[in-house]
Length: 240
Image (cartoon, rainbow, N blue to C red; front, top):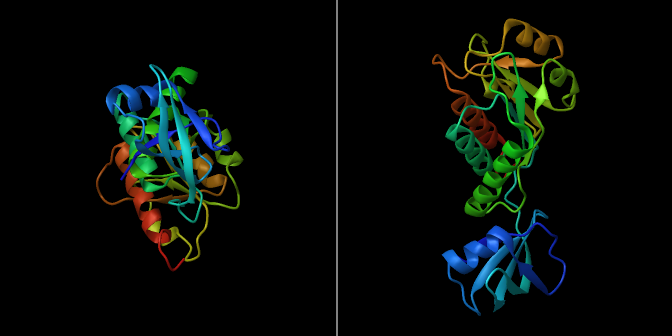
């Protein structure tokens, strides 16, 4: 299996330049030489078999050998809207969401959540997405939205999607609430301590449905990933 590299610019010609952090990894970590075989992707959904034909100190040139249409996406759009955890747990959440096929991650600003420091933090999270996509071989990047405030988010979310909110007191499970046919899903996960009563009531009033994940209290990232795994298992099959 060849190493994978992400290019920001669309891959359209017979040759491409690899620069920036990807070139550093290629040239100074892998120590790639002319003739090395690599796989490139550009968030188009395709991947490209390529061969290194020139190397410099800070960049390399690759010849595109073949475009390969390889989809590893879920047959639905799956959005996780979560009050992000602190520190390294953010990275872990992002990486595992990418691996599970989550389409979009929306940080939630709630009464009890940790504030996300805007652009710098978002850029860092998006870097985690690229790294995870290289590892799990997704050819589309999970999108990370700007932070969304409550209660406005409850009413702005797509009405055509199944909208679910984690609630330890709910009676139904995620599986109970999923239609048999593939349907877009948006899942809201609260902060440590959960959504406030007012936030939860506003969600129900906007048509969201509560679900539970068992008898134990889960951390943010555990709840988000357990839910994503259930949804992926429901719809990521050859017969749907």
